Length: 120
Length: 108
Image (cartoon, rainbow over all chains, first blue to last red; front, side, top):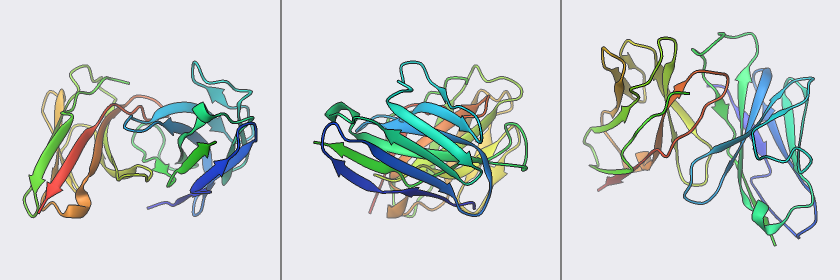
């Protein structure tokens, strides 16, 4: 199946710093990428949807100025957690949807391996 | 997306079939049923999906009832590496909305 690479897999940072997480589709072009957040023992929660070349759409309650998303190419989307605080510590996961493939609901989404962010 | 209901946890003996149920009584005609699993500290892994016909692939089988209000994921010969959280998702739009999932524990 298609491969989505997410980097870094783990990051520890000091409170107040910014952290960038990269999500790459390695063998396909992704028109749409999704960013999820997962707290311990909880399910994945969608944060935002990013379409290549346009602004991301954020879910209710997600601060767009804090979680900056850039999807400048068909193979790369980045999530930057700005001025990170301990409450931002979480597992962040990206997902990608292929361009030009099957349309609609009969289409797999592929996930990255996740990034564990720990803010001290 | 239509809401799904899954048992919180299940156990299965190694080598036996694991049958994971999912209720989705409010599913609409064009909504697909997707199954993903998540092994601890990893991203979700696609397993299988279907609309109304039963589906089978190298990982699992998906049985969807005729009224489409429920489905069962079958892992024919569970191994210890199948221990994970299994998510049943009814997809109506671009994204996938995850519920609580079933924590499957495969025991030796």
